[in-house]
Image 1 (cartoon, rainbow, N blue to C red):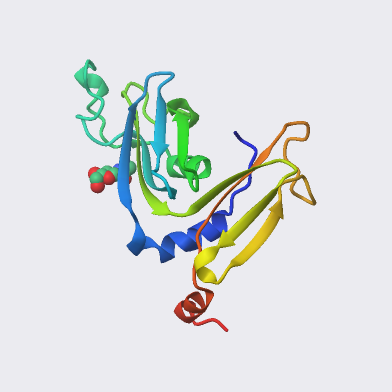
Image 2 (cartoon, rainbow, N blue to C red):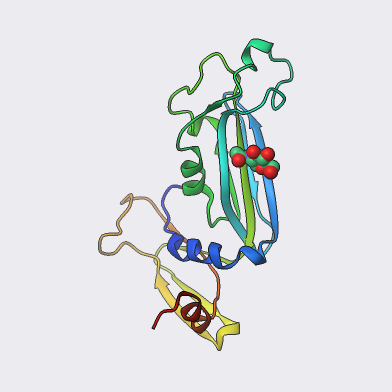
Length: 187
Ligand SMILES: *[C@@H]1O[C@H](CO)[C@@H](O)[C@H](O)[C@H]1NC(C)=O
């Protein structure tokens, strides 16, 4: 699952452009038991864009069941960089599963019972997965049949995990280039 390439740059640009077209805002909370898995997912025709994530504790209610008060009283605990980990793992995917301890690189507040809370939106995008050595055809029907092809294979500087059978995962949106140029006042 670690070896793939995403058009994150395009995706980020698209996120800004498409804020008005956002389908839904979702929230996932997973209590920090050693092997709990947090699952983010988006419906057909949309992909994940992580907005915010907290690993720690910001109130004494969330994941409080059965925990002693002493483990709930610190409500200003958060692990730095959590949102970056979630974005790297999940942005541009239709669904994404993370074990809470992937963000647990060090303990931001020992003695406090923590949880992972992720806010994300599902926004409209075309999502493709192409097995290694095949060709991904990206196609925008509404833009007058524009298309491009990318071969999913090791090439140039992009040569991750030699010996592993890989796949290329691309999420993209079709936007009107004239409209973008106008928006950013480009030539
Ligand atoms: C997620 O959204 C909720 C509701 O708007 C908010 O209370 C919470 O603080 C957000 N979580 C993070 C990690 O920003």
